[in-house]
Image (cartoon, rainbow, N blue to C red; front, side, top):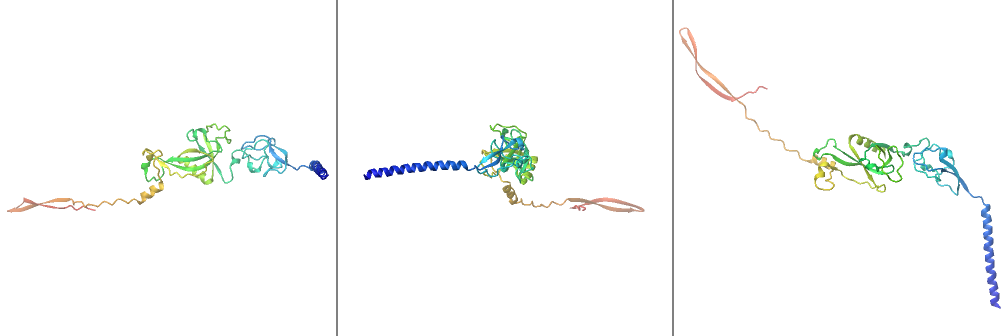
Length: 306
């Protein structure tokens, strides 16, 4: 009798729990359907927008964004129109203020220059431009070659040193977009993104020396400290040539003892020979006659008139 009663109680509890769960699910669905969904208007790209694009009405559209909008998003189209794109925005992505230039900055290359930076053009060829593989967004080092002014050791010949490192390439020719397939682009000029101080150095170097661009891995940001090399060191049998340091060379030349002054050896005086005749006067009656009977010779130092 007790077992039958216990079985009935357990069965009733199972039925009650199942019914309660079904009622809870039905009520939850009704509540969720009755609650309004929270949506926000967000400006997104209507098509792929490459760097340098000046936004127009047809480039963007306003859509409903469910939930919380992304940080730096724009909710009014007029806040994005006529602003330049400084980072590629793909179709359907929200247009963020961090990917747009400031209002009034316009589009093109100038809009991609960050505050405090400058774009400097460098003339290149297939050799200087690393066979066309120097493209926008890549990083390069700049080497200079020439004869240093006031060279204390001209026997070294032409000298080469690293001038700038880890410099970003802003554009290759008139192209500010990197080739998607990484194909080389042959251009006569590249624009480099530098500080105002580096712009002065680079401007002088392009006019007074020969420049070589060296392509580097964009993930390699460590600054090397090569001392440079010279033409005279390339023939000493080592793969890289002997290294030099201009400062050490100059210091060594300053510290080198000067050669002793030559002792002045007094020169023998110039002698002169003076001949004096010996004369005798003879008087015969009223006649007077001078007869030379000999001469005296005297040697003495010659007196030089100052």
